[in-house]
Amino acid sequence: MTGEHLFGFHPVREALRHRPGDIDCVFVSARRGGRRREELQALAAQRGVECAVVPEYDLDHLAHGGRHNGFAARLRTESSAAGSGSADLVVLVEDVQDPRNLGALLRVCEGAGVDRVLIRDRGSAPLSPAAAKTAAGASEWIASERIANSRQALEALKRQGYWVYGADPSGRPPWEFDLGERVVLCIGGEEKGLRQQTRALCDGLIGLPMRGRVASLNLATAAAAILYEVVRQRSADGLAMASPVPEPID
Image (tube, rainbow, N blue to C red):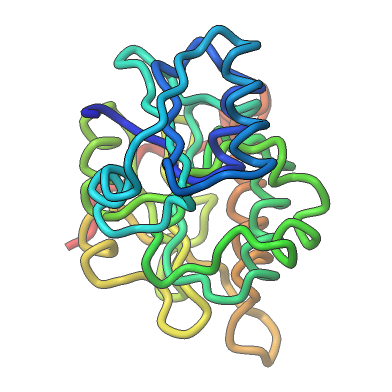
């Protein structure tokens, strides 16, 4: 079962709904029964996608110890893994522990046209009912994937030509960056922000100048400000105003 994968019921279901041509095979655990398994099997059959029932430990191995909830999908090698937004805009999230913050962030990403959201599995809140409620339906439309390792994901995206930026209070304002290229925006958790290894992989750190008395913004609010600068730059008028791509940080 080599190749890129999606894990969890909702990511697999939405991929079957919106981009079945990208899916090579769906895997369901032999231990998982009930409505969700029946729904995925029926949807896979309807979309003409192979669906295999496999031992639970096969999915444990595939997810490298991360959560899969008994469901996974293998993407085709040529898959664009695209959602409904721009294929040149990806958000990577790690250590966001409050499901309401995660839901709010997903809502922002969907509104800004983010193609997909990568969520580092260990340390991050699940896509729970609380997260889905806060997302106000956005979680059903944006492609979100649980990943086991931020470094591996970012290195793969860099090989595909993406520039990687991290949201950090110490960074430069977003309008000083050229965000019109293929961009990954990394968002850290509520307490400690980005992991040090993730910061080291960033080509630049983006911060928001604070003019008030509060030290920083909620992570979803900060992400909104940065992502809508991306939207502005990618409009016909805004792109001409963008600065050159900055040199990588030390």
